[in-house]
Image 1 (cartoon, chains in turn purple, blue):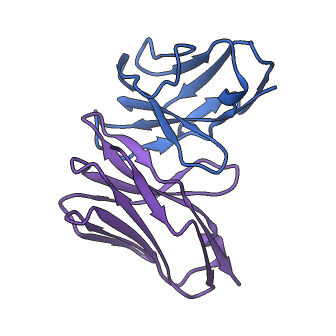
Image 2: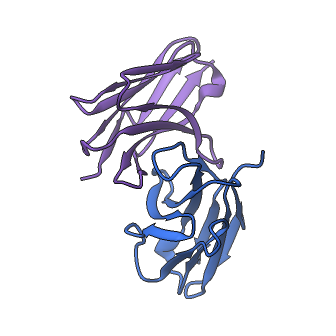
Image 3: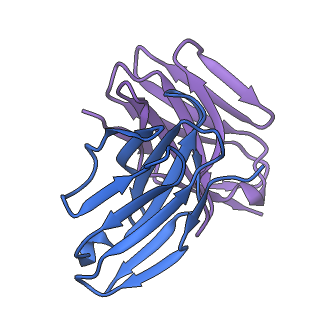
Length: 112
Length: 114
């Protein structure tokens, strides 16, 4: 199957705290794992991605970790700010054309 | 540079009408993807083009859906005899490489079928 599961569905954090979103995938051939941020009515914006030959990647306050054996990957946002409030989607590449299978999304709410 | 653009941004169609949705990818991008996003859900894959060739259309929900990219640049997604269940945001994404690269999304077309 091509399922990508995301947990939790909604996450509320105090400003300044960390937020972690976890995803699992089922296709062992998946080799590319992007994360997208989508604000209401806007396009999905790529915020970070990781490939299967890397275990962790960091970009300022955002990091992603990948465990290929367990088929799960996580998004970590540190020092959260109100502008981090959005829906976050994880995705995994599927097939030779690397189309993306998306999770259902996590609503992150940062409370000032 | 300019990102992916889509038109129209909003489309209201009466059930049974045909619609055509346009995508202008980033210039030079080889790969083009169409996704359908229902309210409160993640994008679902519809179809994929590499230049002008439609290499994967496994996600198209029915034969009422048709996509083309005749010159390997602009793409059009056509839906014939629209149904209420076709109401969704239709997203286009482009990628520089033949596969495995970053996908950049357009703003989407919100289709409402009444």
